[in-house]
Every structure is written in structure tokens, then in C-alpha cells.
Image 1: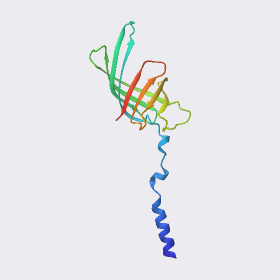
Image 2: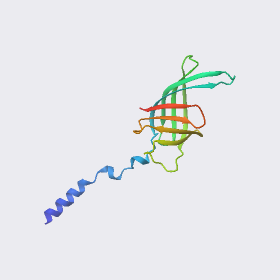
Image 3: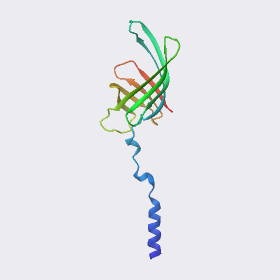
Image 4: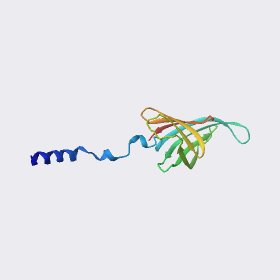
Length: 139
């Protein structure tokens, strides 16, 4: 009988994995990570002239709600210029649920909507009320 009880306790000890106590995946914001990004838009410069702007590069969203971007930006087909910036971001959802493919964010105080693909490997980040749409793919 002691042998049976010992075997049961031994089996029970191996039945629990380390993952049982980890943070559930749906509590991690889906935007956290490094993203290959690109966008194109038409805008008006300070002189009132219409210019075509395109950019591509890396945007990183850190878990500490900071981020950085390193982009090559081209204005009206000219020579690409490197543009680096740090930013702060916030998920504006009332309750974090990373199983939702549409999330609302503030980036440096500007409102954006992110629409993720079903496997969260890519997204389109759109400025609320604006023309800016950034396509992003997880690195």
C-alpha cells in the first residue's frame, strides 16, 4: 500500500508543468515586439505644397510602454533620409485581451487603431481621423 501511495505522489509531482503558473498569453499586449513597417501617404508641407511621403523600417514596442522607430523616409521620390525617434504608447482598451484582433492605442498622445491578423503576425495601424496607415509585420 505504501508503494502505491508513493507511486501516486510521484506521478502527481510530474503532472504539473512550469507553464501552469505563468502569465496567460492573453494578458500580454499583442503589439509588444519588433515590427517591420512601411507606409505611404500624401501630405501638405509647411509651404502648403502637396508631397508624397513613403517610409519603411523597424518600429519596436517595449513592454515598459516605450518604443522606438528607425525609418528611411522618402519625400517626393528624393533621397531617403534616416528618421529615428523614441515614443511612449498606451493600450486604451478597457481590459487587456490580446485575443481581440482590434486594439486601440495612444502613441505620444495620438489615437490609433490596430487591426491584427488572426495569428497576430501582422497588423495595420491607422491614425484615428487621419490618413496615416502603417502596415507592419512581426520580425
